[in-house]
Image (cartoon, rainbow, N blue to C red; front, side, top):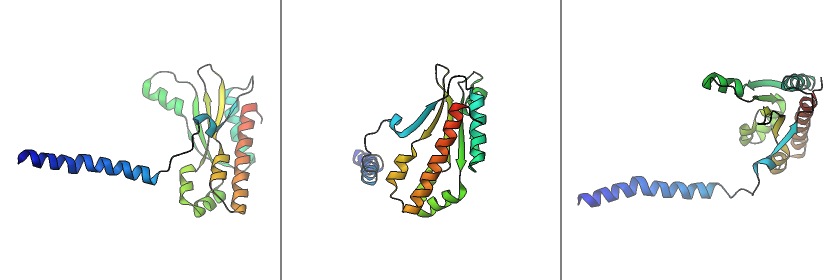
Length: 173
């Protein structure tokens, strides 16, 4: 009798919830199209002679000129160095926002909260090459089925962010 009780207990609390969680996960998440990670981002190398510091300054200046607010900056490499006490390749994530467009996107769908604010990373690869990296917003814009006026705003934001990336990559002030 005790074995039956243990079996029923384990079945109820361990096996069934795990089976149910798997079925819920599959039912609520359709299979994603096969994309590589590289296909979901836009990357630009820093031009020869453009330092990471130059790129950072150019990015901030261009964003300011375009009225894209720098709302956050995550100095990832400095944080890793503080934790480990060891040097880390440069990596900083900058977050930019056009508040009015962001509000309109959220009003359209709360799911856009997962993509706000817009991020541009400035990173150094293992060979010392600097890169500017951002999510390919075309994928999001095309998948969102936006109203024409909201799609135009999203494209405008995408264009500004790509402008910021080019300024950083080329060290433009």
